[in-house]
Length: 316
Image (cartoon, rainbow, N blue to C red; front, side, top):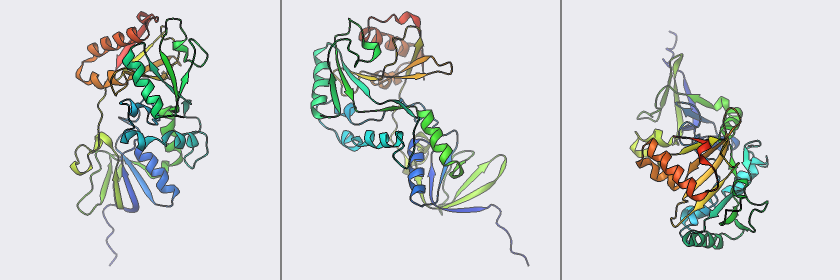
């Protein structure tokens, strides 16, 4: 009698990673470099959700030091810029050359005394990682601030900004054979097996020795794998009125940047500003129209010399 073949093929791996955001992709790369058999499972496109919607800032702790003391969060991410720079310059096994947008971003204080103090104390807590840029309108200023009306303080941060889509593509190209698409959520059975389903292919059973849940919002249905979620209501600004590229945190009295601006390009090559920071965090309580009004007020206050009537706004 011939042995009965199992209904579904079975694949055994050392590690199954559920979630194709930056955390899952980075882990996949590191595990495979160390000789482990690893498989990443994604239910949509790579980076869907928090990763592709992020501003691409590689934080080094400045954002988390605005209270005037070094927070635990600042300590944890202190070495991230140096690690990412090695990858961005092709000096690490994770090769991300071509993904760098800018080497540095800025921290900007307005003329408000509380804003100046916040920036000043943050700079004292992070010597070597924050450098004051002197002079009004000097070449060291971002183009958007080279205006006689700007009277704030500018600090250059040791924090690069990356193009997230390029980062995702780099991981996908190098590890395509270890990434699978699952139709629906990947939920382990009682014995740890994960059945992958696709409408055009037979089901596939994965038997991992270990499973890592890195799906962010996708883990919400799994109480034991719930992760931190930070809901944001981001704003997009584009148009002829933009005063050039800007990568900066505007600080105020809060321990959260008043406004965080990064610059990207749309499909036509036109500049688009992403607005985050406190505006985006508080914006989850506002609808689209109120959020755009709030963004216009902030920009008019922080960059009053710009003609914002020549720009278009959207939110996500």
